[in-house]
Length: 115
Length: 415
Image (cartoon, rainbow over the protein chains, first blue to last red):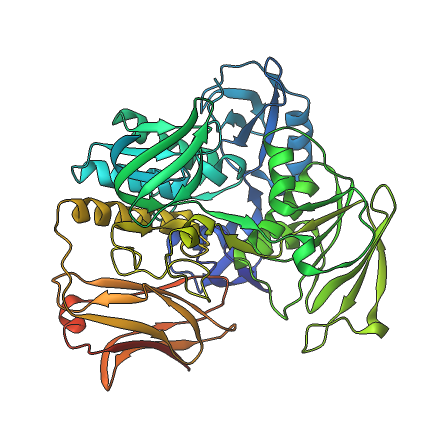
């Protein structure tokens, strides 16, 4: 089976072609190794980094932006969002602070400094 | 009135990178003026990732990229005036601003314009219909959600498939809204290809090309929009009109460089980029005033903004030190297939190579870009594809610039 993909790893957006036979994926069109890995992952176990926001309870109208430290399975994105939505944090917050632990093999960490 | 050597208007990614470069080039009395309560600019609300892969070698979210630069600004002790709005700029580099302390007048030796852009509004588009609540520019919705935690709506239509529209399609989906459609008036999308994939395809959000919002319905709150396909004149085709119920309309229909101050100072503006006309040091036609970032040309990647700002920061420092030469110059021109070229003038007798930045006018497949002056070819480059939404760059080595005379044209041929 042949699949045409656009790589999303960097802004170049290389057009990739993946030849899938059983568990084997052969990739052409990549201009770097990350692209090749992306195509293989997309065909076998697609993952995405999830970015969102967490409410800072001791500051008015303030949210701290966050991300999953590593990509999570694509079909778990909305479950990750539900976990993030039910989380709150108190200032001060530093980049890298863990906001949610044990989320599908990774953590949700803060990406903004809140004084 | 006070004095500063370099005044930078805007503390977003362009302003911060320019400040760091100017400081490191020896001008310690460099200050940043920003109207918000903290520096970082538009990156503060761009919580998605994709920033910094070229410049910093790793993929960061907007706030993280901003923080890398903010930390460098504060580490050097560069003075930052926040909540400070510049209200006037003169050609002799007198900057007038207001903040909590009152009115500030600063006489600068050099000024760097880094004010970024604002968004085009519904009023500018003349969309017919009532004026209910629920209509936002995409960036306003982004700020309300990402910085203040408001849910702006539940059932969304987005007009405009530039990167902001695409990013907000995904953002609204993440927060539980139903994004019914992204409509794009052109026959192709204006955003990065990777964003079509990770923002629309991933969530089965339909993209309707050659389609616009023809009418808005709803009294107090938006109830729906009428969309329609457009013909070559980009006007709605009556028979294709279709009603989509929704409570939110996001407009992602163009960024306009905020050049009010630039015009006030009498600085010539390029009608295609809507930013100042500049040379390879990013100096405008008014000597000692430089420009960089989105206020100069709308960028796709913040990495290139930081590069451009470093050029401006170094240029402003060199200007103050009397090191900017005024030798032989050539003007750049957009040839076949190219929409604009920046910088608009280059020195041809310096020892430095120059990178030209440009955009193509239409989507193309495989192309060869050629940079020529008269009959002399200065540089060529082949790309597998080129689209208007992705800025291109070609480097011209100094020895090639030396043979340029008068005009340098960038054009393409389809392969």
